[in-house]
Image 1: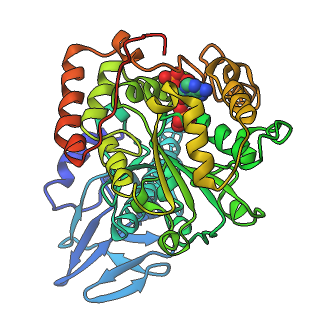
Image 2: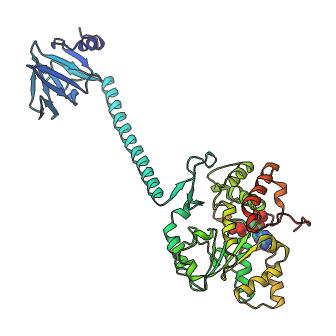
Image 3: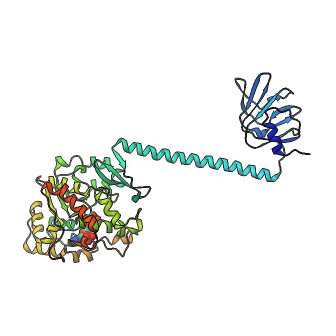
Length: 448
Ligand code: PPS
């Protein structure tokens, strides 16, 4: 009668065994035979070995070690004499005493073995893939770190945050991925740069500037604003394409002054910076980042959570106060004009004239009026060249959320909790106002 595998298993564990039974199970993978003071280790392929007439035969080439030497065991026999000790360590293989070849094993067991083999290879493969992925990720992280770029980790952004710290700012991945091209971009003296923290009224200012510089030619603004005035650091149309644009180039960017291209200081292109009060900015940015771009948003946060990120300087292109302050400190440079959203709201014709003077343009009073009318909130909201409705067609924006949302000063009163209002006031008082900059966040006439 064939002995039960587990009774044999226990006898094997005694480390002393003379191969008597016909078929027994061993726990292979590793094992050894000691005879005449020499030890032969079976490292693997145990299933290809069998016992016959007191000898162990190997049917496949196996590298094993005999004493100190490594020998191929294809033709190797190990004679098991009565005084030989067989030690076999764990795992499952069959071991036969009466077959020339690998013994026939019952189909169920064969199936199990096959499954086990597949599982072993599959887990090995998955393990290797995981290791490669982790390794690559770690390599990328080290590469970024070497250049002063650190990922921003906050559970609110999920496991794969796309924000990074670089030179004191929080930047989206498409900026850090492109940072060398940003630094080395060839600025031209006759460029016109429009710089802002996001949601400060950039699009509005872009349209105003384009019309002023093109002598109030309303035909000239009949193409999408992103084609007339590309977004410098964004993937579309891309820095290389912007580099090839003919002069004069109009370029929009949300980069702070300290991250503008290296030769900016030397070329001194005309640069207009627009600032907006923090409270309306955070409301507008929340709607933009979470609602307008809902179909492609990679993290979901409540408005309060977003405020928390904003006041703790963890929102893209932030810290907001640092961005605004850097620009304010450059306000007296010959090539820089610093304006505010609130001033534009209060007196658009006045601002149009101011910008025209800065750009060296002369406009008639009728031109000024016409530009102001064309650039009013209501007009821009329905103007398909500026209202970003093409983002709906691209499937990246929610068509129930307008880009031209409210266009007001003081809309924050309907959104921000008392707690964050006072935190934003503190930021203004501690970090912005000491520089001499004040930003109105409400008008007496709440319709402005
Ligand atoms: S972006 O995505 O950063 O370029 O956005 P940006 O253009 O800077 O800011 C969008 C906000 O500006 C408002 N806007 C206007 N307000 C008044 N008048 C006009 N003509 C105008 N055009 C745009 C727009 O509505 C966004 O503000 P909110 O508060 O969300 O309405």
